[in-house]
Amino acid sequence: MRKAIFLFLVLILRQVVMAQDVESLVKAKPVKWTGSVGSAISSQPKRGNALEGNPIHYAVFGNFTLSLFENFDLPLSFSYTRFGLNVEKPFYQFGMAPTYKWVKLHLGHSIMHFNNYTLSGHTFFGAGLELTPKKLRFAAMRGRLRNPVLLDALTGQALQQPQFGREGWGVKLGVGSQANFVDLMLFKAADRIESIANWQDSLYQQTILGLTGKFAPQENLLAGLSMRFTFFKRAIFNLEAGGSLFTADQSSTALAENIPLFTPRTSTTFKWAGKTSLSFPLGPFFLTTAYERIQPDYFSLGTYNLVNDQENITISPSGSLFKGRFTFGGMFGTSRNNLAGNRSETTRRIITNLNTVLAPKPQYSLNVSFSNFAFRQQAQAIVLNDSVLIRQVNKSLSIMPYYNILTDTSRQHSINAAYIRQQVEDLNPVTRDFGSMQTSMISGNYALNYNSGLQFSAGANHTSIKSALMQNTLTGLSLGLGKNIAKKGINVSLSTNVSHSRVDGVSDGLVANTGLMANMKLREKHQFRANLHWLSTSSKKFESFNDLIFQLGYTYVIR
View 1 (tube, rainbow, N blue to C red):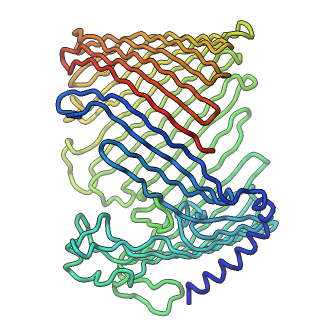
View 2 (cartoon, rainbow, N blue to C red; view 1 turned 90 degrees about the horizontal axis):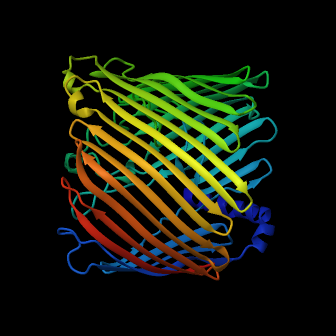
View 3 (cartoon, rainbow, N blue to C red; view 1 turned 180 degrees about the vertical axis):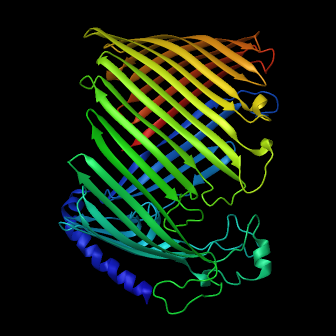
């Protein structure tokens, strides 16, 4: 009966969709093929026991997309190599969301958003409706949230964790506009107990490998509130909140009967979560303060990635000075877990993130970014040894200047440099000797581009990696030369990079990489490519090798 009603609604709503999009459907092509087919042959380096036998690798491949009325795409791809034929089975989910004025329908597979703590980003198969006439805000959905996954009848095992089939429904009602609104919502999701037979058998429970706790059908009822108010045209207050009744086992003893929508049980818990923020101008600056708290064991079966047991306090300033020549943005705050105080440890984080851009002229600019994330665990419920507590500071600094020199209309010069430093500092007294690491990189590059298609580049770089086990530095030079003939569809380039390696202060030889690449396009459908690479290392501490690798390929584009 339920399937018949759903099919009837789909048939009626399809007429609305066809009436709305008849003009675009008439102009659209009913069937259209796009994609490409091609082949490639290449050599493979042979070192040790890798790729024993034929060092020549070949491939025939194809990627196709069948488009129906320019709205539904069906992808298909395959490849054939010396290892055999591989056909990638496409994953199809059909859905449509037609819109007419203030009416929006969701049919088939779709995604709807109530707020971050109730229904958000979860795919469902069913039907939904959104109405936004003037100040009214209404939304409703009903559908299947996931299919059941059963144990294999022969082996008694599943390729993935078995799961019950799950269905859900939700409704949201509000008033207001994008600048000022209040929304109330209700969402319920429940596993279908009958979707897995004999799930309560002890043998079935023991067969599920890696399961912690009891495998049981779940149920969830959530109520949510979202609001936004705008003051003085620029100050904005936001609030999102959710309350969750979550039952871990629908077979547990009921605590009450005849309660609408939900029956509380011995395995039912109530938790809440919320986030509030206030954004307001301060002269040329803009400041956003936010507070978020998600109680331990807060669950929503309408979201995929919701981390509970979290408290976050952040301040995010941003601004622009000197008529936009200097801009900045950042975030500063703290975060912690173990809100109930019943975990063996508490993890605290200090967040510092700042990004600035200085651009006095369009020809040159300076970008500076800095971040500092500190993690610290403290023993709480029980006394823990220092060796199991994480105390770590992650720092990152990047400085990137850029200078563009436009001498005339025929050529353009540019100079850019970068300094990047990343540091992981382990503060644990037991692990600090081998848990810390520092990486720094400095580079500079010069490029010259002519309107005729000739390109030249030269650069230098130095990379250093320091850890308790080893210190490795690479200092090198790079050169590049290219020619692009746009009218003939030809591009040829030659690049080389040679670096000197030092390990623990001792010279460890050279690392060289040289490549010659050529690409040609004929009539926008035929594409030819040829690449030749030479890789060489003369290391004393690591493996030394000399590899000459080539690749030839052809692709035919279907439009």
